[in-house]
Every structure is written in C-alpha cells, then in structure tokens.
Image 1 (cartoon, helix red, strand yellow):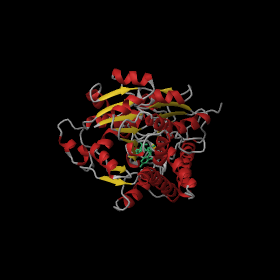
Image 2 (image 1 turned 90 degrees about the vertical axis):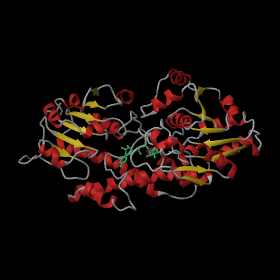
Image 3 (image 1 turned 180 degrees about the horizontal axis):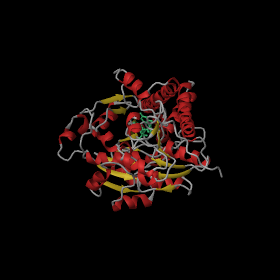
Length: 467
Ligand code: UGA
C-alpha cells in the first residue's frame, strides 16, 4: 500500500521505517530541510535499537523522504499525521500543526484517502480534522479520518511497533477500518514473523497481535487513558515507597507481593525518582484539560502529577540526609536521560534533580552512556562530563544513580569504591540489593527501603568547609 507519513519525529520516523519493513511504499514528509537531507544521507537522528538497520534496508527504495505534502497526498492511499502536539501554557495539547497539515491535505485529495491520526491527540480531534477538510471543499465521500494511536516506548520503539501488545484502529466505518486492517495484516496474520529478516522477537511478545477496532473517539481516549494509567501505577508505587520509608518496610517486597496478583501485574511498578519523558507529563496534563473541557473534574490525575513532583523533592531530602549539607559537595551523577536506553532528556527527572542540586551549590560530575550532547543543551556549563561511571565517581562525596541504564546495574563495585572519596551510593532507581552494597563497603540509600550501612559503621557524614 502507498503510505504518506507526515512528520519525521519519533513516532513518524519509526512508523515510516516499520511500515516499509511490512512491505509498504512509504514517503516520509517533513518541512525541515536539514532533517530531510540528513535522513537521505543515511544519518539516524535518534538513538533507537534496530532503526539504523531498517533505515539502511529501505532508504531510497520503499522509504523516501520529501517536503512536498501535496505530491505525497496525491500519490498515497493513506496519510498518517504524526506531527508534534506540544503542550500550551495551560497544559492543553496545541493542535495547530495537526490543523495546518489537515488543511494542506484537503487541497490535494484526488480520490478516496484515509487520513489517520498517529500523534497523541485529545478526543474529538478526528472530528475536527474531518470538519477542516470538509470546510476546504473536499467531498465527504472522498476521505475518512481514523485514529490509530501508537504505544511505542523510546528505546524499544521498533520492537514495540512490530511486536505490539495490540493494534488499535479507531474507524467510524467499515471501508476505512478495512484499509487500516490491510496495512497491519503482515503483523495480524503472522506472516511478518515468519520472515528470515524479521526484526527479532523480544521477550514476552505474544504473536500475532490482536487488532482492536473501535470508534475514532474511543481510540483517542484509549491512548490518553493508557498513558494516564501507567503514570498512575508509577505514582502509586512511589507513594507506597514513601510509606515504606516511614515504617521501615521494603518496597521491593511489597512490589513482589502485589505485582504477582495477575490483576495488577509486576510491570510499571518500579519505584524511583518519578516518571519523565516527552509523553507522560504532557499527556497527563492534556488528558486533565480534555476531561475538564468535557465537564469531568479528573482530580485523580492532579494527584498522580503531585506525587511525581514530590518524589523528586523526597530524593533531594535523601541526599541531604546522607550528606548533611549540600553546598560544595562533589556528586557523581550516573544517568541524565529520562530513562535507560535513550539519549532523550526531555522532562528528565535526572536533569531536574541536577538543576536542583546545582542550585544548592553542589558540584556535579555526570556520566550517561548516550545523553551528554542533549544534556549540554539544557544544563549549565559548570557540570562536568565524565567518560565512565568510575571517572565521574572520582573523589566524589557520593554517587547518585538517576537513570535505569543496564550499565549502572552491573558496575564494578570494587573499582567504584576505589574511586570515590566516601563510599556512599544514593540510588534513585533501586538497581542494587542493599545487602550486596553493604558487603562491598558502601552505605546505600535507595527508594522505599531502609538505609543500609556496612556492619560496625554508622552512617558517615563527610565534612566539608562551607564557602
Ligand atoms: C510511554 C509509554 O510507556 C508508551 O506506551 C507510549 O507510547 C509513550 O509513552 C508515548 O506516549 O509516546 P516512554 O515515554 O518512552 O513511553 O517511556 P516509559 O518507558 O513509559 O517510561 C516513562 C517514565 O517512567 C521514565 O522516566 C521511566 O523511568 C519511568 N518509569 C517507568 C518508572 O519510574 N517506573 C516504572 O516502573 C516504569
């Protein structure tokens, strides 16, 4: 099938590359000439597993790049809109890019087209797209608008796309639903998975995935409700972790105890320094705003957001408890990305914490396997960047783990111990067993678990002169 994908950001680029891998002819449309030139030259603008392989495989053949939206619409049967929907100051989704693309599409319709929202948008957006296209004099039987939300996570975007838990197609008539079902047929009939060159199946993936057909409005709500529910799960366990800290419980044991209930499940129950990224914070605000507009006061979401912010303040309190005063303390920060496996620092809790610690007068030496370049764009120049966790830890008053990179869960603890000034680890992602850390000589602070101190040692407080 001939497909146009408008917008070459995270979702557009991954969707375009994956549609090409399913055997479709894809044109990826963007108005950023520099980005298009880079993509044509073979550059991969985001850090994403398997994306370089897919771009390499299809670039110039079944995946082309263009700035000509009219031409792309004329030559395609299906047009996916995957442009940005940034938040306004009030927290609503700014839909001006979606509107402008819809208007441009209407001028180029030359036969039946299916126009699909792929960006995360509030309920009613498909209605608006339809109205805009009709207003621009396209005949009603020449197009349909569908919603096909994406559930991919950064870092595993390609495998999430090709091995999804489900595919949601929101279409208000059978003709339009059939077109989308055909696009995803290689996944839903399992033929993609039999191919020798298929991207490898990740653990836990069930194949083939089910296709869930709903109304367009339901599909729009499914996307916002899914992200809100996942964020709620994280804030819930973070709240439970806070209680554990007060009563001397162990949140990992609590997680195991509740996560094994199949109605609850163990995933997205990892306590930490709060969720971040380009999706959860923005989508919660947008869902909150949509609900308010529809007359429902969704205060549960306010509480999810409040707990998330409080989690960072609690972490700063933990650092203070470990070090007494903060001014002048040298801290090794392991992790700047908003989560492991990505170089994305948007709304990263690690970045927000580094900014707070800088304000408190700390010296920061940071290491992240992928996010230095992006972090430098947002952090002030006093932050030092190290080439390894051990270099970051050199002469540090404490080591802070802020991102759940796999590399940080398998540190050489002997080397780390030798590098630091004081063997104190404050782990915002619970990557270690407290018993292991104390056996290796560290005083270990984590989330929702008691402070662990090596035998016969009280919690050390490094002394440092105030400026
Ligand atoms: C999220 C959703 O998981 C995707 O399903 C969705 O498609 C995507 O948003 C989107 O709307 O585009 P993503 O933002 O890539 O994906 O990241 P997640 O893996 O969901 O992590 C979000 C944040 O929650 C990270 O800061 C992570 O560290 C944190 N997190 C996650 C926890 O603190 N605990 C957990 O148990 C899981």
